[in-house]
Image (cartoon, rainbow, N blue to C red; front, side):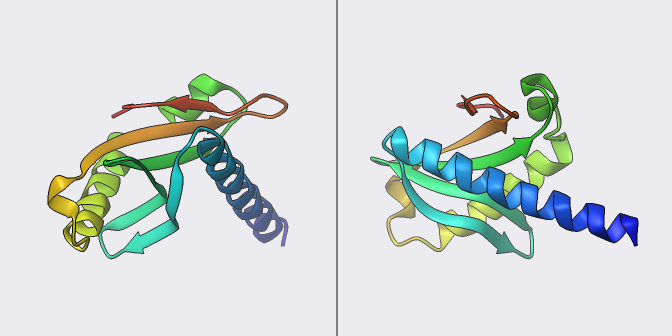
Length: 119
């Protein structure tokens, strides 16, 4: 019973972190195109756009910024890349858009940290 309660709590915490990260990006001038975009190849937490730049963002909520950044494993990076290439291939103007992979670290009682070009 406790494990399922802990999982639900972690799931909610992850969703809250994604919304905080989306608001943070909007404050920085990005337009949010998708939240929790799912494909058979993987999931992208946030897809945002600024000009001709598409940013695929992985959001991590941890106790420290370092833990959050290092929590994005190489296999997760590969899944995000595969999902983003599929998303981009479905866009009519995909050929003229640039793609970047970022991490937003969410730490309690601190402002989010946006690591541009993280992988």
